[in-house]
Structure formats: structure tokens, C-alpha cells
Image 1 (cartoon, rainbow, N blue to C red):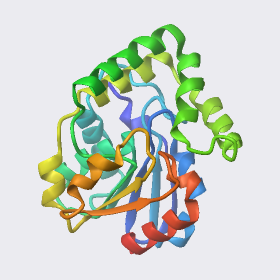
Image 2 (cartoon, rainbow, N blue to C red; image 1 turned 45 degrees about the vertical axis):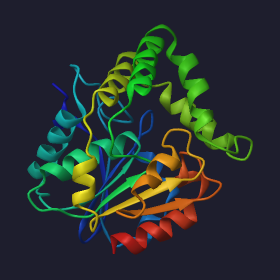
Image 3 (cartoon, rainbow, N blue to C red; image 1 turned 45 degrees about the horizontal axis):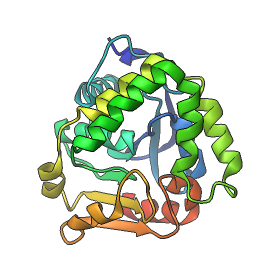
Image 4 (cartoon, helix red, strand yellow; image 1 turned 60 degrees about the horizontal axis):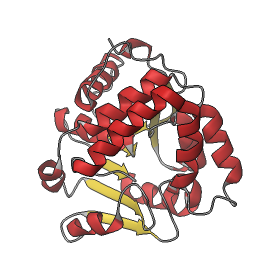
Length: 249
């Protein structure tokens, strides 16, 4: 089981619920870099299983199974209708949650995408899963700095992220890498909800290629930010806070 009943959720604000789902090796604390208090709504910042204050998953899971568990948890708390914002891994989960919601809200894919991994990317995910079982600390210390374009400027934030990620269970890290590898394509679904979907993209994102995302530029709302890698909430916090505020209102 995923221990969904024990998933940690930080709640604050009032109004229409907005669910915030962090990325791989992160936690709900990532959203503290954004001015969420200026975005009207009841904010629900989730720690995915194995991240932050949530317990480790007990079994292997898929992205869809994780989405179902979180939706059921929110429904049990009385939340049936809400908007979703997901960063990277969190975007994959949020997109699946949006698919199964009976009442569709707004969706933000924040440094995330809607296509399945290609053959090389799948191999990379498998390699990561194998690597972390041998040297999780080495992987974390190498991987996190690569998400930023100005590592000197953001050195303090990088150090904090590494410290947090090193608290994760090695098996959980590997499980998430495999779950991301095996997720399905949601291209058709993303195109079908173009009026409800906003994609926020870093022009220098090493994880989500801008060129590949821009194939859908005429069909979707895609907002790209210059001099931004994969961590726009840190690298462009003010501008992205303003863009989220405008969309989520």
C-alpha cells in the first residue's frame, strides 16, 4: 500500500482549493519560494509518499495509482473540485489526477510534460534506479545541481535540496524513477483540455527540452522563461508567482 492516509498535506488560505504537488527528490516546502499567499485560494501542499513528511511507499506503484490514491485522500477530506499545479514528477501525477476528476479544474504543468519517455529516456530512468541502489548520495549530489543554470548564485538552495533529498529512502528514489519511466503518454488528453491547461517552461531546462515542448505551442498555452532551468520557482520566483496568480484567478 502507498500509506495514502498518512500523506502529509500542509493547508492554508481560504477559497477555491488549489493542490500543489512537488517534484522528484523535493517536498511541499518547494512552494515556499513562491508567493502563494498572494494567490487567492485554499492551498493544499502535498508531500508525496517517501518525500518530506510522508512515509515511504510499501510497494511498487505507477503514476496513475499514485494519482488515484491522492484523489481518494482528498475526496475523504471533502475536496472534490480543485485546481492542480505539479512540478516535474508532480506534473505527471497532477495530469493523471485531472484525467480522473469528475469536475475538471485548472491544471498547471510546471517544468513538466505530457508525453511518454522515449527509448533513451527510459534507459536513463532504469540506470538511475539501478545507480541509487548502489550510491544514492552520489546520485543526489550530482543530479540536483544540474537542474540549475547558475549554480553559484543558487548554491544555498542547492545545498538545502541535497540535504533534504539525502533523507529519502533509497528504495523510494528507485521506485519513483521506474514509475516515471513507465508512465503513459497523455498528449491527446493535454490537447483536449487546452483551455484549462497552462505549461510553464524554462528555456534552458535540461529535463524538459524547450524544442520538444514548442511543437505544441500553437495548440497549448505555453509560457517560457529565459535564463531558467528546471527550478523556476527558485530561479524566477517573482515572475512565475505573478503568472500563476493570473492563471489561477
